[in-house]
Image (tube, rainbow, N blue to C red; front, side):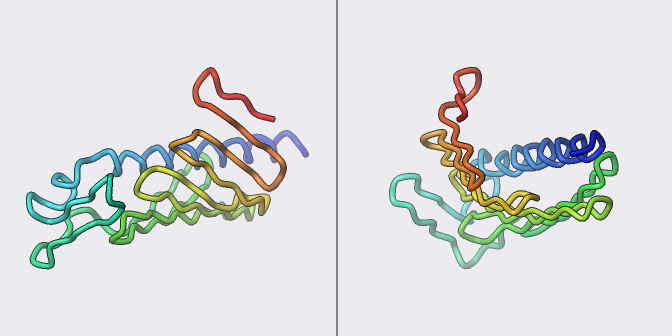
Length: 144
């Protein structure tokens, strides 16, 4: 892999992490702030969401972001159950990738090398079909 390809690949992965963090921030917002005072209630215990049919969610259901430094374009959409899907591509390199983030912050997707991956937020376990396995978070994160 040449130096420019490596830098582009690293920028792509950094950008995916940045968009993931941005979208996870949506999940950290209380339901009352996302949907209005009587719009929706997501119970962390029962695993289902009640949505009042008389209110309209105030959170956008889709969006697009372009990073001119890396050339990455991100198209995302959020469904009513709280799952967000992100499709990314880079016209300069021809790379494409995608990921889905559930309402609890766990993720799964396919990277630009067509490797399938998943991350469980509760356990901190990351698995990639290229053989990478990571446990923990922060400084205590260990990958094999």
